[in-house]
Structure formats: structure tokens, C-alpha cells
Length: 457
Image (tube, rainbow, N blue to C red):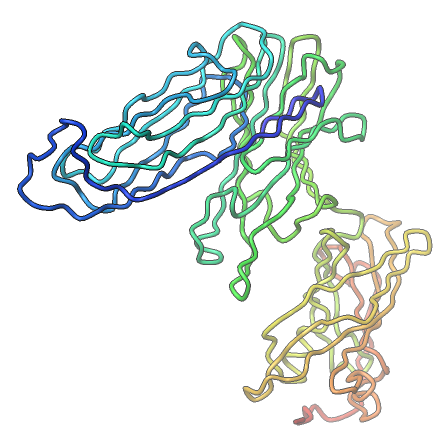
């Protein structure tokens, strides 16, 4: 979608109809040349764009493939024409006829939206593939619509496109815009200045009317595919293209594997680049900023940390600022090693942060599903509280928590049965890559009970 940062938005509509092709004798395009009776084919059109398509006039080329299910003994022709819209023939070039030559099952066509120096209002163009004069076939026409914004010499156009690994990640061969619906944002002075939010790749223009200064180009995900039981993170590669007539011609910035579709919300915003405007001169550069705060990252330390030394496991904890602040990995090693259960599903836990009191809270919520001796266990929930200190070079955090299933808190059970020296699991963590030793936190090893793991049902 194209958004002009002068705040003009243009709704557009597409109608798409596909029906059967049957052999006709109205035209003399080799009709009757065959002696066999051909099967009635079906026909489909596959564009490399999304209709309605919004764009800035910049010699952009849009291609489409027309496919017939069964090869014919005669030529089949589809006419292509503008059927509506304010655009004139000077605004575009396109294939006016698409031919399936005898024996062929595919044909291609294209339309090119031309760039010019004229200052024009936004125009729309509706083209139709097929009509009632289709040679050797009848075909219900398909229409595609384009909304064309004007780009003047002192304006800058920003185009955002993306690709995904949806086919590998979830087994669905989806167009990028089907996998994720993304927004293109312009931020100025910590305020969202303009948004492009359509159903296709996104475009923003109108910088000519914006005040001089520095603008941040950012993106977030409006919606993403739900693959049900096959859901898995989809990796997204983003490309930004910049154009200014006579000055900048299709310069790009690439952001491979810059994000996944795990966080479809406005609060998870990736900053990609900055644009500095000085009159009609623009400079742009990468400026990648991923959401985070002082206690976001991979934590070193001990989890669970127990005075007995029995449950001392290296941390697998990670904190992430997604749509909410999340924590992953608490108690994983204890669960799989000491408790002997296999984790088959792990929820992401919301961690509530009080930045004034420097405290963290985990309200009771789903956490894990496991198997024990190949039998699926009741789900585990987690609750907990803790504190953090981000005043030094590397933040530290201590969390006390409980894992519960079958109405039993298992930290407390381990404490009552002398497997644990505290009634809660305790994690001592630091963002210092060197670990706890340099953070001044040490574990006293006092074995309370022989190292015999308990069996359980």
C-alpha cells in the first residue's frame, strides 16, 4: 500500500472472477484446425502482486501468469484493456493481448506504471483480462486495480517488501503478504508521523511536505497466518527501496532475518533506518533497533540454585520484550534432569516489571506440558516474585518461583521431602557473560540428602 504522509488514504476495490474455457467457433484463429475434440479447460491468473495494489509511479513492472489446465489444438487469445479509472494511456504500458499458442498451457503478461515529471493527483487504473471477444474460448473477465500516487522531483518514495520462510517453517507455500501483514511507519520526534497499512507491500511518499529533520523508518506486524497445530516462528527478510526522481534510483537496504512473526502487535516495533531531510536532499542509512530494555537478554547464572548443591543447574533463562515482557527457560534443567520429565510444550511467561521498586512478578499462568515415561502429564503452571538491580554494568536478578500440577507445588514438595533447602525454586541470574562469579553471588554447597532422584507417577 502507498501512504502519502500528507495523510491521504485511498480505498480501492478488486473484483476477481475465474470460470471455464470452452471451445468456440466465432473467430477464425485456427478454429477447426484440429480433428480431435479437446477437453474443456479451466483457466487461472496468478499475479506477482496483490490487488488492489497501491504504488508510486516509478516505472514499476507488475507481471502475471495465465494458466490453462489442458492444452488446446488451436490458439486461445485473451484481450487485456483498461476498463475504468482516471489514469490515461500515458501513465502505463501493458500487454494488450495474451496468447496461448496451440499446445501451450501458460502465457505471461505485464503492466508497467510509468514515471513522469508531471504533478498530478492520485490516479487509479482498473485493467481487465479477457472479454467477450476471447478467441476460441469464453472467459469471465478478471479485473485488477492499481492506485497510483505521484512522485515529484523533491519527494522521496520509500517502498517496503519482504519474504518469508513460511514453506519451510509451517509447510505452507504462501505469498509474503499472506504470511504476514506488515505496517510501514514513519516516526518523527518520538511520534508516529505516518503509517502505510494495506494488504500488500507498503509505500510511503509525501516527504516533500514534511519539515526538515530526521525520520525513523520502522515496521510492525498487523496480522499473521495461523497454521494451527503447524504453527512455528516464521522468519522475515525485509527490503527497503528508496526513489527520488533524477537523484535516487532504486537504492535498497536489506535486513535479512530481521524478525519473526511471533509478535503481531503495535508494541513490538522494529526500527530499520533513518532518513535525514534537508530541503529536497535526503540521506538514509541503516539504523536497526530491536525492542528491549535494561533487563532484556540471555541470563547467566544458576537455576535452580539450592544451598544443598543438589539442584544447581546452569541458567537457560532468556527475557524478551515482545508484545509483553516475557521470560523463558525457568526450571528447564531441573524438570528434565532431576524430575525426569520431557518438555513437549513450553509456554512463554509474562513477567510484570515494576521499574520503580525494581521488582518482578509472575502471576499464575500456564507454563509447561511434559511427558513422564512417555505418558503426557497434566500441564504445569508457574507463579513467582523477584527483584532486579540494573544499576551496574550488568544487571542481576533473583526470582523465587513454584511449579504446580495436580494441585501440588513441587518446590514445596521437594522441600518437605528434604530434596530442596527452600520451599521455592530460586534462580540467581546475571547478564554478565562471565556469569555469577564476577557478580559476587556464590553458592554454598551443603548436601542435605543422598543424590537419589525420586520416582513419581
